[in-house]
Length: 550
Image (cartoon, rainbow, N blue to C red; front, top):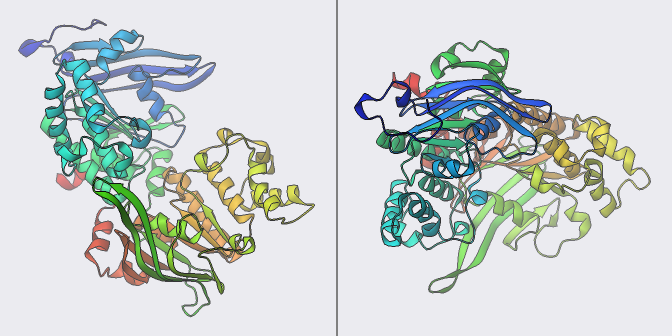
């Protein structure tokens, strides 16, 4: 088939022309290093291909190279990647000119990436970001494009779409920003939608909504979808066929039901086994009458905001009370915006709060001595952004030792001990964050937090951004450390399956309020609140959707 744009084939188009996206023998290398080796697949209308694998397996690199977006120094791409659109004909993307690619991207191909906060322009309103491609590719006037933008925001479930047109991305929740990204991607009715980890950073209920939204829009518009994820549970809810990538090579490529029921490759079986599931092994039991380490009563947090009618406030946390016993884990769950992280920020002094929070007999609110602050440490969701990219791992771990004057005269030895504690070789002390994998970076973050020898460790979505297999390893590490060092955790997460594995008690948050606070065994055995049941129901089931619908 010709590498340039052809005429629409109409009723007499060939079978090849009916294929929306065809990739054949795709190879990608950077310098002398092969990154992707011989990937081939094809997609027809309304079909979804799932590409799954751990970080570094070549998932995103495959799609970037196949769509002409790979722009890395020394990168070489060979093979074929042909996209067909009924309006524009067919285009060979491997080796295509920038001008040809500009005509394809946003028109024949739409893109939804993992983090909408970095994909959306913070300086432009939603209207401008949606209408931009309509004006460029469809030649619409501002008024016509605005009408189309309203239709798109309504189609993706944004409430009060007319009011939202003039807002900026930071004024939306994470789930709403991702819906706007989908609206932008679908603005020109593309033949192909590329979804690269589009739900990884979202809570389970929002994730389920986004999956259903894409499936509904796909059925309405006949769009073909390539969905990239490290989570086979998500892939099972969206894909017809799956490619499993390991170190740039396809180790399995089959229908989703067949792959889940009869995995052939050991790597596929590892990915399936690593998925967190409800009903997994709970943490070891502890003394129910143990010492209360943290006692929080009527915690209240308000943020001042500007509104069209003047100054107002957001009541982020409303009179929340709970306790954490020494040596146990309190799981804190809820959707984005429920107040989970705000509680952590209040306890660590990052935001002012009312009420009381007492750690080991001393108040955490207001002016707090440095000696008390070091008794509480925090591990954040994204280790790459929480570690200074210019600071070696050993120096990052050693910094709390210097600031709090701990282990004077033996900092290097203590850093080696902490690295060993999180199962990293001492040689990693000289590495920068970019030289580490995601799991290794998070282990460094945990070691850095443990350097303070805290009484309480707050883990704020500490495994949410990790691959399922790496996530399982980090969770095992945290459980081992709790047993070995008698640590106390506050484990903030949106995934109830993981919370069940880690927690002795659970606090369920919704819109700043505590809707359920009970021992984990009781809560998971018989959740009392409809909201808790909704969170549990939103976890992707073990069986693929295709099997349940058959």
